[in-house]
Amino acid sequence: MIEISPMIEIDGVQKWFGARQVLHDCSTVVAAGEVVVVCGPSGSGKSTLVKCVNGLEPFQGGHIRVDGISVGARGTDLPRLRTRVGMVFQSFDLYPHMSVLDNVSLAQIHVLKRGRAEARSRSEALLARVGLADKISARPAQLSGGQQQRVCIARALAMDPAAMLFDEPTSALDPEMVQEVLEVMQALAAGGMTMMVVTHEMGFARRVADRAVFMDHGRILEDTPIGEFFAGARTERARQFLAKVLTH
Image (cartoon, rainbow, N blue to C red):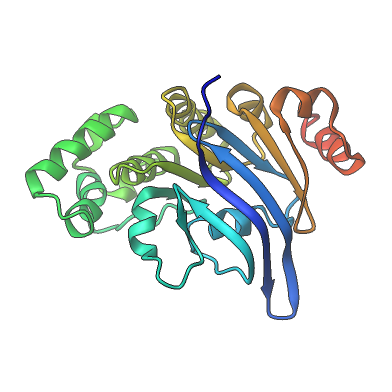
């Protein structure tokens, strides 16, 4: 049997915002090449947990390791770590005065120190991969929301990450634009990208994810294979959640 190495290890993570504890003893492991959907009601700690994985949110207890690197260790170079862990948010955060091509190329040049020609070539290839080869000269304001989010995915992939984190990447999109973003994510998963995805898109979860992590009130209540989660969630809270989201 081939042993699959863990890419993301979350062990007993605790986090507070002031006096309010928002993550309680959260533990899970994401293997290399695995797709894990993090779901649950609003305010359950999903986005906070994912942001802890690449150090965007500090945590006060437990340990997180990404590709063997301890995220919370004092000497960890977090900017460098974040080049290994791509992040796609709800909001697009593209530079409005720059072309699509320059938005995707910028961090490659300044962080990875790629030459401009190499960065341009990589950007063009990735924009073609997300279906935007004809938009490289456009400004973000000239794109639909779905197109902007696909630019964000290309920008994250340009850093050659070992894993990708998605924080509700379709929640700001009109319904007809959601599918074009999910199709790009589905292709990434099919290509073997390690992914943690915070989402309410349960159809996507069912098709693409290997496992579901269900959270409520800052705790992981379920961490089960995706088929088992949909066939018969173990906790009453998860069953209530699924009953609501699957009927809308």
